[in-house]
Image (tube, rainbow, N blue to C red; front, side, top):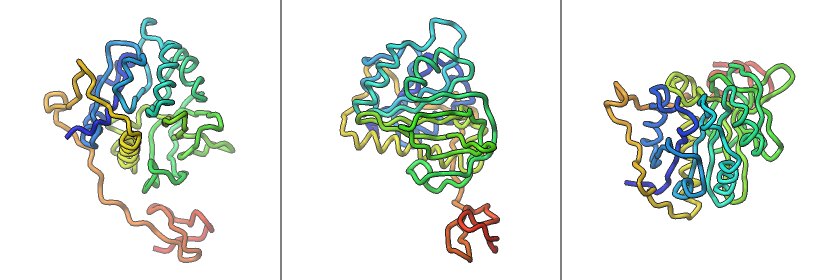
Length: 269
């Protein structure tokens, strides 16, 4: 049954999301109850975005200048969010135009990459039940309007890995990793659970916005077939690990913890 929460993945600016490496996330999004569409033919305008509750822009990456991000697209995105839509964006490796024209307008910047595990989370629907995630991350910096809900410590500084921000009636989600959406990293630690939480929250936001989204005219809904994914892979979440509780202060700790995150005492098995 159609959810009427339509999610658009932008492939006009990024051919890589057409490849097998991202097919599993598309398949999972469909299984998680969102109506998934793909834009591969035109820049993003208010008319193009109007039927969608949410938009995912994953690492724009094309070499030809005609696919550069345009100021008008940024304006259309911001208007869409202000009206109640949701946008999910990631950094783009080496695309200075995208960084300047869209990301910095939303209060985002980034430098090189690192690959440390992430275990520092703030309570949020996206991070519920999450203790450890891993993928290559960009070292991002955000303006204060962004709420950081997952961070990684590098020396004396911490960098946001996932953040959310309100804009008008809508929401923005920033994930400082491209590879988190790929087959390889979806199978690590709590990554798949994190993505399920994220897209479930996107679906919930679309349903609660109270805006009727009709199926886009002339657009075909994505349905990953056996022929497109051989074999078809559906990300399944394993049984949740049991939490530990510190015998000294009683605070809940991640299943893999050896020491209490609150008082630092050793946690007995």
